[in-house]
Image (cartoon, rainbow, N blue to C red; front, side):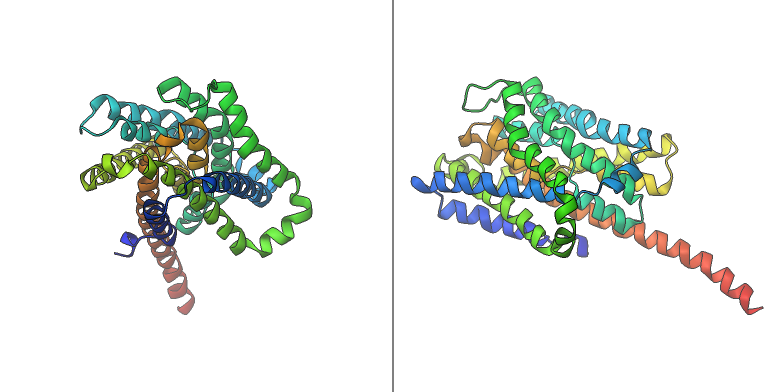
Length: 336
């Protein structure tokens, strides 16, 4: 039952939330952490841009039906399910929790873990690189517009949707593009220090989570969110992921995608990005609401990692078994 283990990042997130609960940032430290967080997020997306290989994007961009369905799953199917959950309103919890579910549903897909799981399962890695990267970039524009289209929560500043997109572009897209344009000079260094870059990813996210939860704790988040609410969020995340995975498998087989492309659909069309979601939430929502709104995203992040890890292992085992069966007759024939 290895897939039930918490991944190291989730353990760090839990520790960060506990730290913010007992030692929240106050006074001058709020501004210090705000500057640190902005710089760390800019560095994170600069590194993402530097890691992105243009050759891999071009190699995987030809399968338009595959990419179109993944975009549909990410930015249409997920939001529809999120809105249905809010319309159903099965449990009497705070409005911010339901807002968090809709917000989770309108985010882009992850990049790194979607590609990693596709590779592990023996899928079409080039297509996964192209699709996950496109989802992440399109999310900079689509996600804030969907927030203004389907949600009632607005940031504390009097900004409209276009201004919010502009802020997100400045904080996420501009560093990403600069990083990608710098790739010709720093690609070798990036490849050599992938472990260090992974730590930069994690540190950036942890800083944003600490800042968000510090503000939330000061505003009494744990008076509004109990164990029963957390368990309900977990159940909702499991149901949401199960529905999307089932629909994506059915769609893959309906469209006649092969096994390698079906794997891409599963891992790129069913995941949501914590790295994009938390920084965006800081821009899109009031500071006092960010902590509680990103709770469903944080829990869904862990659920998707555990479930997708298990699915990837099953695909890999099935693929290895097929290869062994193909090799066995060849060995027998050669011995005759």
